Image (tube, rainbow, N blue to C red; front, side, top):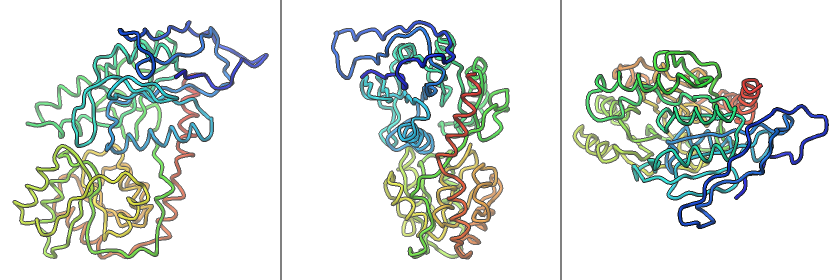
Length: 406
């Protein structure tokens, strides 16, 4: 369990930069080895700047059934392993401390069984892991896992910190019980305090209202190879929702829109989340029990692509998406898409998406009815798929990170 810098010994004559001396992780209190042993690297006072960039991605919201963040980070790890273009280290909460290759799980408690999210047991092991890895750059994927201490340690090591703006104040506030207006000012103050000392913000939207500053780097998303049009699959009559079952994702607004439909089309819901029972209860209260089918979270890209392609349309009803990967995946798979007009991914979906204004339930229903009547366009879907590969997305991200470090 020794994350070695790629590239071996320094190349003669290569430019090098002085790095702080490595400090190994402290041993576990009981002195055990194996899964509880911290990561160790070869101590070196210099770094060969010709070796791949050493990147540490720190993600709190990385569960077994989470969505876009997990998809992005898994694709990034695969890209790094396949190409060797970067030395990727992913730091996430886990059931116990475990370091293997580029994955580092730190002790935590399970927060929700529905999506697998966990709460870390403090920040000491996170900071110790960073000191042992000595990354060239740290990407912080949320503002809630001890961001100030993490940034301080990274700066002590000479590494810049990039805050990745995956969520917004509005999205987070709508996911909490109680009045959103009470949470928003507190969350905004937290976001700004967390983002203030970082070196740059990466985002697909303008984070200014939440962070108090703009984005210096673009957050890019790509597509798994499975998300391609499949003309042989027959398009069904049902609409599809695929995603987390939570109020901030717009699932309850979608149920209300469905209840207003004159044509009682069936609706298939694929996903898991804290509001699973509430979604079914609301469907029953709205008289939709005979029309709604709730299926488990689907992690297999090929099966998910088939689900997109066989729906009359795929609806992404959330009004606070900071990207909206479902819409892009569905469009590339040959599905007709309905999404809120402010979702950044709608731009990439070209003419395959039908949009509605935030808060407009009637507009959502009208967009669904139009999408259901509109023929599929496999040529446009193939063009969307071809334009959004993960390799090009990560190559562009790596270029920006190398420029930041330089």
